[in-house]
Every structure is written in structure tokens, then in C-alpha cells.
Image (cartoon, rainbow, N blue to C red; front, side, top):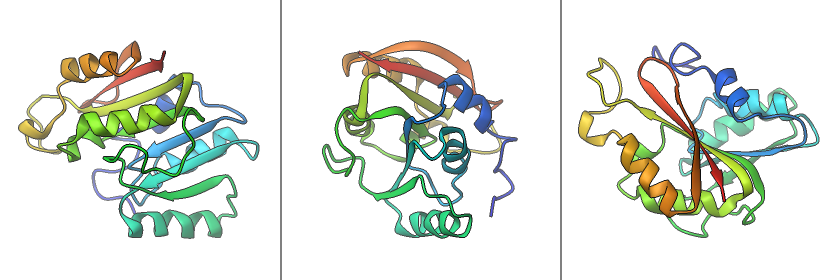
Length: 184
């Protein structure tokens, strides 16, 4: 169930999936997917039976909720992956195998942001996309305290060092910015 601050009012899923040009037969991983499957299920629908959506999280109850919903709705292209994405090589997804990676409101929750980026980039194919959406550094009645927010310029600098090229910066809603990267 979505909380008061859930749903497309905060971040428009279809807008993000369109940005990444998510379509048939692709593989997509939602890193830190949470329990609602907010991106997982729309992506599974966009990708279709020939593709695969990895729902990745460290919280087993979140993954159990997604697994239950996938079974109830007979969605066969969602694969549940339990992982600590702060550890390089920990995620049971093959290196260079994912077309699109999503890090939506995930980085701010960790102090090991560079480690998360390295692990996520490891799984993305050369020429594949990484979409990062994080809280803007603005005064806001919702979201994390300012010191926990991910500074956009620092994220872009780190991404470049890790072998990503910034393709686009975009508004991902009133409280969020988005960056789309390509793996070189």
C-alpha cells in the first residue's frame, strides 16, 4: 500500500521509463526497489515476457511483498534478488548484463554511495543506461534532512570517474532531480 507520499504524484514512473527508453525484451534492474514495486511492475509490463526485471533490495520483507504480488498477478518476468548493493560483486546478476539500472531514492539512504555506484555499474551493459533520481537540495516538508541528500554535482563527478557519461539532467518531480547516464 502506498503511503501519503507515494505514487506518481511524487515521481512519475512512466516519465522515467520513457526517459530510459524501456521497451520489449530488455533487462532492467531496480536497485533498492522497496516493497511497493512502484517501478518494478510498470517496467515488467513495458518490457514484456521476452525481457526481465530484477527487483533488488536488502530488505527481505520488501522482496516478499513484490514476490507475492508478482504471483497474484501472474507476472513471470520479475526476478527477486536479495543483495547488499554496498558490496562489490554481492548481487547475483551477471556483470554487463542489464540494459537499464534504476537507483530511485536509494543513494541518500547510505553512506557508501561510491560502493553502490560501483556495484550497480558492474551489472550494466556497455552502452546501457543508469537512471538516478534523488531528493533536491531544497527546503521541503518531506524527504530526508538536507545533510543526507545527494549533491548532484558530486554524483556527476563520481559517475564520470566510474566510467559513466552524463546524458541528461531532468526534473523528476518537484522534490527530485534525475540524471541519466550511459556506461562507456
